[in-house]
Each structure stands twice: as structure tokens, then as C-alpha cells.
Image (cartoon, rainbow, N blue to C red; front, top):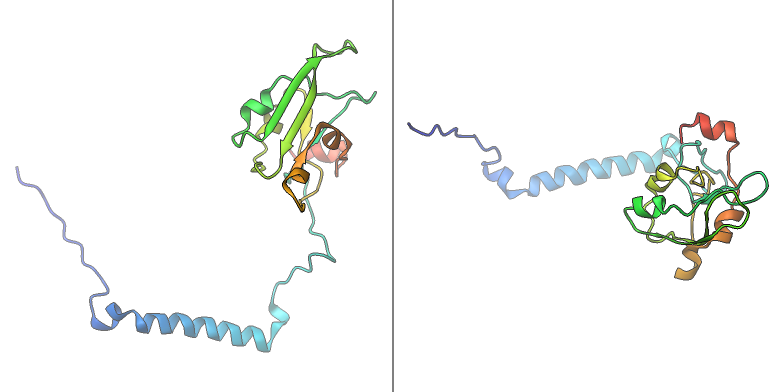
Length: 174
């Protein structure tokens, strides 16, 4: 039994194609042509005027996190560790304590999210059985001057409002 060998023809064997210099000049000519066209008539350029005009954000946008509360102001989180377990970046840290209001057994005493480690995948929102964590704040520009400011605590997460109404959030499929 013999092995069948298929010979593949290679292109680019000519002296000009192997030199690559002509191809580099062709690419630079195309780039220069676009530069001149855009420089002389920039009315066709698509430009976002970001600081003045904010982009439209849909309810499915995964922005900064927030913790939701019940109507009486108590936190919905039951410290089940589902979001912490499901997080691929391991940026969520939870410490549980005993709940005294009789709603559930546990309450988070500490709920920290390190935004520098977060990859904004939304797995924590999907894993939460109580709909306690959401990423519907509409905050897409997260900046700070030092690392400590990028660590969101439970109080900061509770005080962050949602950017959308409950109907918009549910309709958005988040």
C-alpha cells in the first residue's frame, strides 16, 4: 500500500513577490491614498464626540455592578456564594453572617468586587438565584487614580442605582 502525496503549488515564488518591497509599497500607497482622501474631505468620517454626546446604552449592556434590595431596603443577597463560585476571574469576595430579620438564614457581611480583575462577563448575574446582583447601572467608564478605589464594597454596590426601569431590564433579556 503506497502513500498518496499531494503536491501543493506555492505562490509568491517570483523574484518580485519574494522581495516583499513592492507589496509593502502597495500597502503604503493604499494607506496614503486613504489619508489624503480623509484629510481633504473629512465630512464622511464617522466620529464619536464622546465627552459631549454619551452613547446610547441598551438594557443588555453589562456595566458596573450593583446589589439590589427588597422594597423595605434589605439586601436581596443570601450569601449563597454562587456568584463567587461562578466568577472566572475570581474577583468577588463574600463573607456571610447570620441574618436577624427572619427573611433568610444568611446575609453578606462583606461583598467586594475588584473591578480591575473583573472581565465583565456577566456570569455572576446569571448564577444569582435571588436576582441580587445586576450589571445594569449604565456606568461604562470606570476610572480611578489608585487600585483601592477600584474595589467596590457592599455599601458602594448597594448605593449604586440602576439605569433602567424594571420593565426595560426584564424586556432587555438581562
